[in-house]
Image (cartoon, rainbow, N blue to C red; front, side, top):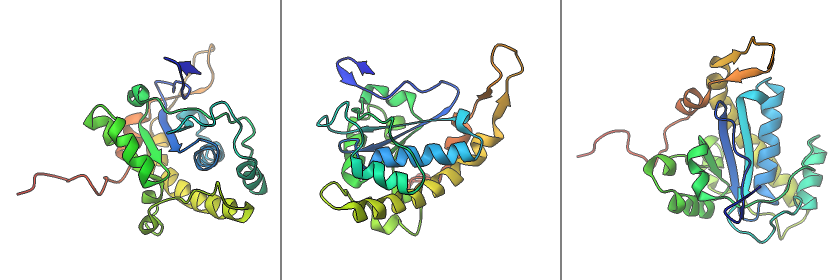
Length: 212
């Protein structure tokens, strides 16, 4: 979708927990994370509780499919990324997201610099920070200039971190799930944003209280 001349993520549902994964061109790492996270939500029966999208910090690949090596890596894991089209992260959409997940520290710095409020800055987290065993590694490596094996390795990192992230927000998503009973819409309605966000661990860079 174009918004003020930019290609931007689809507007999240106001009732769902909204997460956007961000990498450089939105053709390798962040699309893989989006597909993995959506698969986790679907398998948990919580697809209606969470809106998942991805975007890039640069506009080199706007409108393109994900890199064929990313699609192949996903396919080897039984996942389909064929519907993806690259889009640019629009900072004006920060208020619509509960969580903005950076794939490396460069994306994290850029996103935090674009956020207009402290509330929005605190929404930005690095993906590997959600998995303690991977957190020291810092970044999900960019496989763009590498081979198929590198894409498989990167996808494995993304899967581990996404599983940990999903495990942290799942109780909030599930605990606030409300099934609509009106005949006009039999889908599950969700009021999950605040509860799921509250389930996230504190950002280690943010002080927990006043300091001397």
